[in-house]
Amino acid sequence: MEPLPETDEALDEYLEEKDTDLRATLLELGRNAVRLVPTCVGLSLGLVREGLTFTLVATSQEVAVIDAAQYLDGGPCVEVATGRETLDLDTQDLLDEDRWTAFARTSAAHGVRSTLSLPIVHEGRLIGGINLYAAAPRAFVGVHEALASALGASAAGAVTDADLGFSSRAAAVATPAAMADLRSVDLAVGILAARHHQDVDTARTTLEEAAARAGISLVQAAQVVGYVRPSHG
Image (cartoon, rainbow, N blue to C red):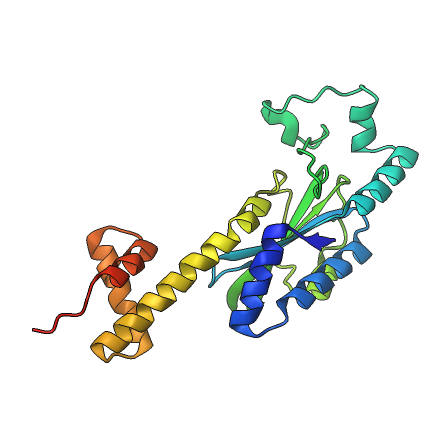
């Protein structure tokens, strides 16, 4: 699997800011997931504190291999291709266990038939989550513990088939913009700290309180800081 273009962009900026090899970690997570679940076509890593999502998706070649296996053994793609099943994207029963689930094909994504969500917990605190997507039904049955161990996550609280629409992909596409928002907030906090001779934590609290009182978002409040000149009365 490979990063979405937006994840590629976000990783470059995140690596520069955080000085951590998140790209290598993410790719290793993808390799471990595919090793345990060969039909895995997507993996999203979400970071709670930062509110950022990074996503890997199967390459065209990987999708072709999965297609070949399903045409040999029968599978969701075969049902659609042979015309034995008519899929209506507007019907709710697409998510039922007895029907094939359709997911829009793109250059880097494939039909999602099953998903698994695993929490990442550190010292009793939720710090992130991993969403896995597979092209085969029930692909994650019986491998929750093995996947959690291989991916550094927790099998406790694992949820299956909660994101058959691959919504984390949209979150990953929005991550570069989210990172720009984080930078604007950090910049505003720095300006406030210098302007009022405060420590960073106090300046951030000041910004958060100002946003709450004004009924605007933290990002909007951060943008205001850049326009307000310090008084020299």
